[in-house]
Length: 188
Image 1 (cartoon, rainbow, N blue to C red):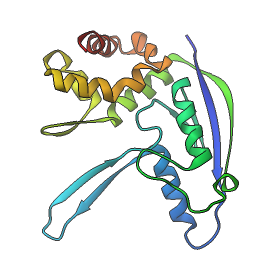
Image 2: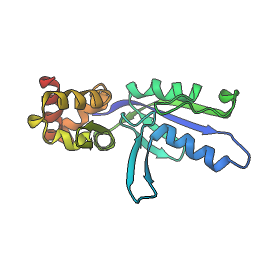
Image 3: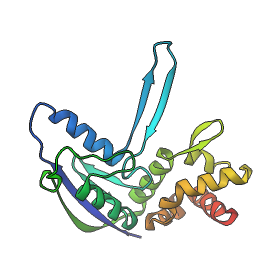
Image 4: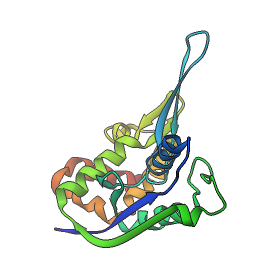
């Protein structure tokens, strides 16, 4: 069964010495990234920096092309129009709309790619618990053993996925995981 989505093509026009750095920040702002900081005493700290699409399933079709479900379209377009994302305001110039160009078209996505995008999103989403961040996918494996505060944290973290029309693709490709998502919804 095909699912509805949007193919968004984008580019950023920036020239100068900092061009590679600008591109890197631009893509990190869209997709998010993991930052590892090593202090002088040897301690490592890992920070998860969210991007606009971190909590949504998406299919990256090329360097400057992504397919997103209905509920991810508006946050992505807002970023492309304004430069604002969950981590910070990304704007190097007052003429941001002139630097960033994009276009979009409606498309359909088959079960397997939609399901894979949802699985990747569940692995990408980190839920902050007392023992540290845990991937939503790992937490779903033990959803029936979670405490109420952990259930709410997990539910809040995966709400964008639950609201995506692509989540139904899991019913045919990953039925156990789909049932765990349904169990989570019923327990919250």
